[in-house]
Image 1 (spheres, helix red, strand yellow):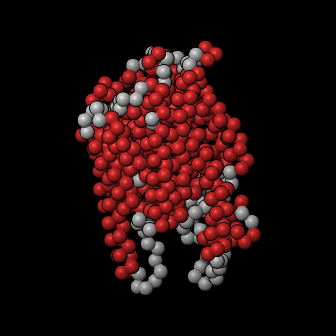
Image 2: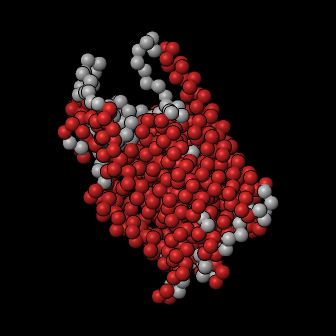
Image 3: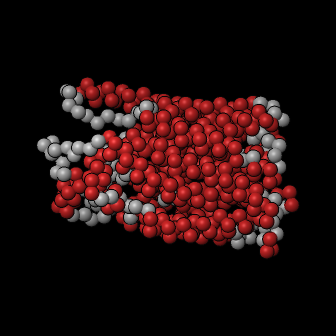
Length: 484
């Protein structure tokens, strides 16, 4: 018997399984419900869970990415963050990077704690922590304090996104997840759009009460996370079997009997860890998520700088960072719905990443002074880069079957991509290349997106081959196929 990371009682676990799924054997009668009842339940879950999860991630991303706005806010008067913390360009980039080191390090243990401590409690704790730390960034005065606070911020934010993706597997079937992940992830693009607009407004507070505008930016944007954490603690439902009652509860359990994660399933065992780490196909997912994380990271941190390089200066550069995010928001939602609806997550990821690569290549090949055309290409690159992320995450969670393994796989995926994969994005837009249109950054992002496109297409072909093989060997028996 495998040793558990947390000790469990096998007899108790068996009893819970029988209670929740109605004695899971081939002779057990199926619980019947209508499509209208299922759709009504889905609407109720969506209205209860998704707005709250999207708002949580919106605040998280706002607090994470506002350093990109603070870096150039009021730079013409030398009241920007980089100047006032006496940081060189390399030192400031190191401060950005240490956030990602912490982010990669703490994601896996955070997902384990999410199930152990309950989602509402753990997410509320993380939320209060990163809000308070963000406000603390408003008080840094040198590179050392900046780097230290950014590291702690990375540790506190690390568990949120993989935790939310894992959390959705307790509530939704595999073919329902991508569009829900998109609705949460799209709030990041919305935060990018609002972040630019908020920075534009706060930029006019420069010198208020003796504080530079970038300090007010961190204070004002960190406070809502602290306040909202109390709302999350009391109103975020943990699991459907606890939150729902009566027939709705029975429908939810029947829907998720095969495909959903279960709150009563055992905690992770070393056998789960071994199985997940030695499943080589998952490394294909990790690789393509690594590839998309480079443009995701660089656009998150440097869109204000890129727009400044397109001829827009100071506060106007903040404002012009809004449209790329706004278009990406719509593209993410529509593309993710289509990917789930047509069971074509791999193809959608391949196509969107290819479009993003085209946008970056066009930006670097057009004349440097073709500002309007290059700005249009930035919008295309942003939409393609952001839109292929939700189908990738939905694809991974749909093709890992045990509750413990799906939590670990999602955490590793986001850790490799969201942490390690984002580190190169910190360094590929050096300030001295602004006059040349940032060729290093654009070519790097284009190369990564082309790799993503090829990898997603290759993984889709492999899953198709495996499904055909499973059907040939099933001898007419029902078999669970890989999602495409």
